[in-house]
Length: 305
Image (cartoon, rainbow, N blue to C red; front, side):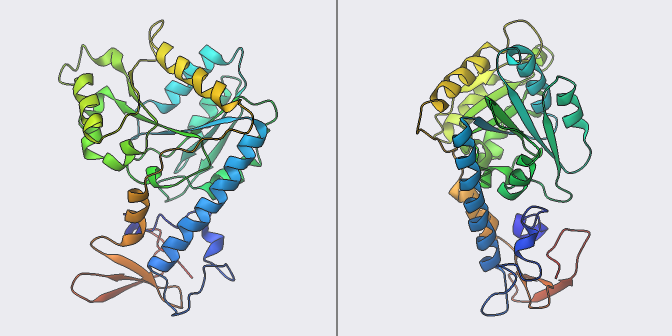
């Protein structure tokens, strides 16, 4: 998980652990669970400010999550085509590198800010906050945040959004909710995308996919759709209209189904917990009781002093 691969440290929050940052030192000179919990606490604090900012502007903010290639950007393009004439939409794009997705969105005449996360496999609230400096929310109806393609880590980080939308595409297989429960438990809506491929992939059964979702005790709506073909997006567009109407109610806010279990996995350590010594070296504590010093590991994104 993120405590071993280092992706808890992102371009958005690294100021907290470097130099004189508020999490740069701990009382005992080590920073394992303490720092990781602190980063999540600071993330949640920033997310609350982001959500307050969205609420002040009456903007419905949605976090799109899926594995790479499930069709998030294609869904946004089709949604813009369907709603862009009467609703004002903006997009924050998250990828490790490139401006590719933001370029596609801008080609639709919609403002888009690209976040390049480097080695971080998810967006966090600090990165979204920085991206908001490049967006004018005045008069905006919907802000979509397209998270980094990853079915694990994005589910654990509140960005300030109002709802989480998780995508599962037909080519991926219908057992994804069973394999990645934290992600799908965090979903307020699940979209089964690329349904136009169902005739070519009969082994994918949407009913079975929804069954796996219900086995998690999730009551999130499950919609099967395609970005190709007239009328395929109607359930998704109707859901957006309902959420937008709710968002416009004065004084009302909503919170996504962020999973506390997912957050716990990012700090509990699992098989190998990481800690950081007073000189910024990362140590991994394994079940054998040994501590392995990996120093300043740039390649794997570990914390550096």
